[in-house]
Image 1 (tube, rainbow, N blue to C red):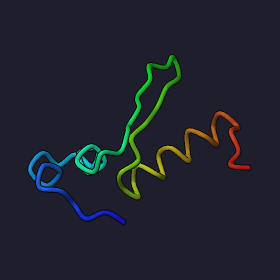
Image 2 (image 1 turned 90 degrees about the horizontal axis):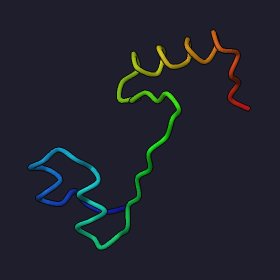
Image 3 (image 1 turned 45 degrees about the horizontal axis):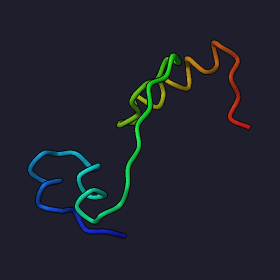
Length: 58
């Protein structure tokens, strides 16, 4: 596990930890709806959406 880098702490972006340790990161554009899950409340919202759309976790 890598320690937080100074740039990660300053910018509050965990991606900086990877970049500061010469690890590649990737991003892509998608047409799919996506949601940030940073809190238990966020998780509950996403689980409700998945249930409503009949999307399983298996």
